[in-house]
Image (cartoon, rainbow, N blue to C red):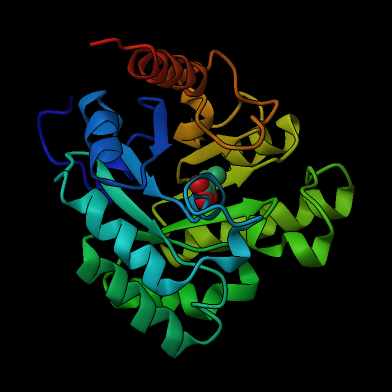
Length: 257
Ligand code: KIV
């Protein structure tokens, strides 16, 4: 467990000095276990839509649901930096972005993350001007899964590589403290990492980033549907829970007074 409170500036300063292992948490016990494991950045991700709330994708997650889960995770008082995802449609205008980011901070978040680059730059600038640390998210953007028709790897085409580089540089210039690169080809993720001054945190983007992040329920094996291919060395707690529950159920059913 980290012995002191980690800030966004601390995460920013890890670039080139220390690799970053980040995980998601959606409630009090999970935030506590993740924090006790010494994870310096804990994300209340909108992935909670699929792995906790039973939605088909993240587009259904509401601002109210994010605030509820941030409050629960914040009660763990983690030493790791607690970052909250801004849900779909919560940052369409600059005013919405600042109002909703502030509401997540009031719920206990210490930084916010939103998906996009130059297309959301006015919102990013306003959030940072409101003194809320900002984590970028580029590459495959789960909140756009419906319009893109699936989860596709980004960076295969030269035009995508250039867009990603320009977006990453724009987020760094705006003052983001780090950027998540999701499902970006390994070489492009590594190139972005070399070029920008802030840490890149990859998910399914090879090992050339400054750190990696996973959805914790994928890592421990309790995600309901499937575990993505990039998750290695995962535990199988879902299977263990089924065994424990079935054993207990059988002991109740078979009990003879
Ligand atoms: O919502 C989430 O959990 C995320 C991570 C996959 C980075 O955005």
